[in-house]
Image (cartoon, rainbow, N blue to C red; front, side, top):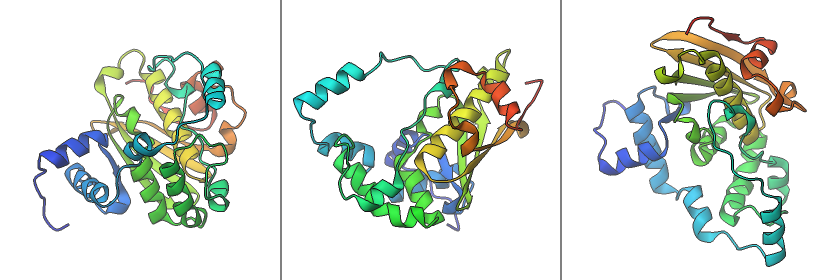
Amino acid sequence: MSEKVDLNAAQKKLAETLKGIGIDLWGTADPEQWAEKAFENAASEPRARAQERETAAAPDPEQKAEKKAAKAPARKVSIENLWMTADETVDWTEALIREYAPDGLTAPDRWSFYHRMAPSVLEGDRKAYAEVLTTLNPLGDLMEYAQGIVLRTPAADRLECEFECRPEHMGKNARRYLGAMSLRIARDLLAVLPVEEVSILGRMDGEEKTRATLKREQLLKRKMAFLDPADFIEECGGWIAEQA
């Protein structure tokens, strides 16, 4: 896009909904242009989250009862437990071979999207990665804790994420905040795409505050509720600034 275009009200509303996340395959680091591209993408394809609510088939009473019984009480998300939860893992191989969700719980339109994207995703197509990230928006709920997030897809087995820290979280608990963000970002991205590692860089006012590369194998069988996120990042070879 050769020149900037002022966002209209609809674009601004959508930009807010998409939580300010940019993807570098759109070819720009300009947040306004991220929003423009997001608007164009959403205009041509209804948002998956909205479709889920409208078209999801209701489970039968027995399934509904079992699911309700198994559901744990909701826990308020904060910096103190941000890394303990993550998005549900997408089984792209299962999505490739099955036209319908085997568990009967995934919304039909969501599974249809998985099924359509699976061949390209499993081939490591980076444009397919960008479409998945745009549609599923796995880091959207983290914008309460970041001023901006940019995702990059440099290789079929690797994702990169850069986030701008929020100053209000960079006080005495900055280490915990930086560790929690880094670990949660890695978990969400490893859940949504079949990459082997995620690199994270956290900045504030142009200054690096944390950097780490987390591999899928490092997160396997780890009890997230019992680890300190900052210590874990450093255990995995990452770095967190001593002074916020």
